[in-house]
Amino acid sequence: MTEYSADFRDSGLIFPEEFLLGSATASYQVEGAFDVGGRGPSIWDTFSKTPGKVLNGDTGDVAVDHYHRVEEDLDLMAELGLEAYRFSIAWPRIQPLGTGPALSEGLGFYDKLVDGLLQRGIRPIATLYHWDLPQALENLGGWPRRETAEKFADYAELVGAALGDRVSMWTTLNEPWCSAYLGYGSGAHAPGRTDPVSALQSVHHLNLAHGLAIQRLRSVATNDPEFSVTLNFHSIRAADENSHDAVRRVDALANRAFTHPMLRGEYPADLLEDTAELTDWSFVYSGDLKEISQPLDMLGVNYYSTTTVRQWDGSTAKQSNDGHKDMGGSAWPGADDVEFIQQPGPYTAMGWNIAPEALEELLVSLSQEFPGLPLMVTENGAAFEDEVIDGAVHDTERTDYIRRHLSAAHRAMARGVDLRGYQVWSLLDNYEWGYGYSKRFGIVRVDYDTLERLPKDSARWYSELIQTRTLPPVPGV
Image (cartoon, rainbow, N blue to C red; front, side, top):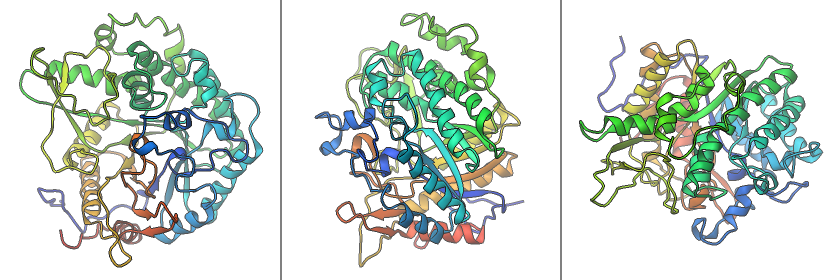
């Protein structure tokens, strides 16, 4: 029996050959080329160019220019030995208005990317939606509008027909929690709305989009791919013995609002009750839940940190340390009496606490709740204040973070969890949404002036893990 260290700082742990080790990015964060090949504007183009929405007024117009540097980046992935690359497809690069025929140049870029991955022996994992909704669809109402889900299904079929002979895993949505609650509730993400009812309507229509897209993809894919969705699970802790209802409320909004319709064909009764003063959920039509609850081959798990909540007493200053920018609205409709308290460190540069033990417990709990459904860690990583010293980035903190969370993944597997892989976030430093270019998550540094790529120590460490299948030590830790 493997003996693990109390602080998760293990080395020598062996991962099976079939455990897929790769990395991930998102289209708006890396591609740039915002007006190339007929690409239309997305909600993030509009949001980032609205004064006061993004730190320093940063936009993704250029990002790290992955669109023009794709061959260089593919060679870099091969050099590191990545076994998989999880990328997202920019909807407005395929359909500028969110409807109509696919743009040949847009599809051509992803054709080249997928072919380049396969030529280098790297498994393509394609995400259809990582938050860049065509602005034209937002102008018509966006995700609070049912028709957006129907347009998404059409888009999924177009992309699936073009790439469905080569992509090995399709992911419908990345973190619909962020799209719904941060985009339409808190205002921290595009499109920047602050309406709790719109947020809840978006939850349902994103769920519906997922189910409809799975069906369309299945109808056109020809290479027997796997189908999945990626959720950012909130690992919720109670601040004290009186916080159990606060935990339940946040769990309903953050986790069960997606897992239950997608995997059980129902919305949790307590979620409907908690939000009854806001909406009667009449936007859920008869038959919707059957459409949503399509069989999946994999559940993607994104994990970075934990969340600690308690019941707010209604009189003291309310804490709102939920890990996201305060833009005036709330990401927690129907939970106004819950406060998010500051958690003990250490922290990453995002201010998020480091708690690898919570990843182990999350994977075990999901395995128990949804037996028979394989899991994959589709995002896990950390931002730190990197320095270039003598042409190198000695990012010991990031390497230690990744090592400790891989130890957590290994422990979960030892406890019987069917965990199929780990995709580190992120391959490249890039555009970090509302924080612009101020936060660096990459295992590869990007000089934002020259766009030169420089693998950090964490990239070399990760490459050694892939090559040896054995968790290396982290020098100096």
